Image (tube, one colour):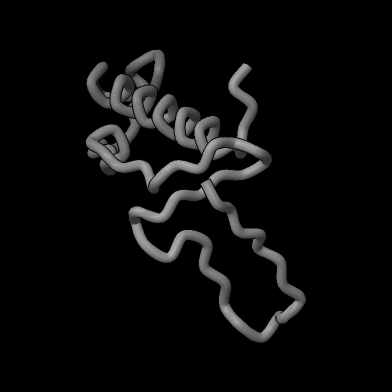
Length: 86
C-alpha cells in the first residue's frame, strides 16, 4: 500500500485530507480507513432535558442513543489513530 505524506508551509490555501468519501485516512501509524458512516452516527433526536429524571433525559431511549453515539465516536477516533484504544 502506498502512502503520501501531508506537509505544507503554505498558509494561503485550504487543505483537504481525504478528497473523496472513499479515500482512506489514518493518523499516528494507524491503518488508513475510509470515512466511517452508518446509523450510529445519525443525529440524536432529543427533547428538553428534565430535572425530574435522575439522569436528565425524558426517556431511557434518549440516554441510550447518546451513549451509543459516544461509543461510535470513540470507535472512529481509535480506528483513525487519533485516540488510544486501551
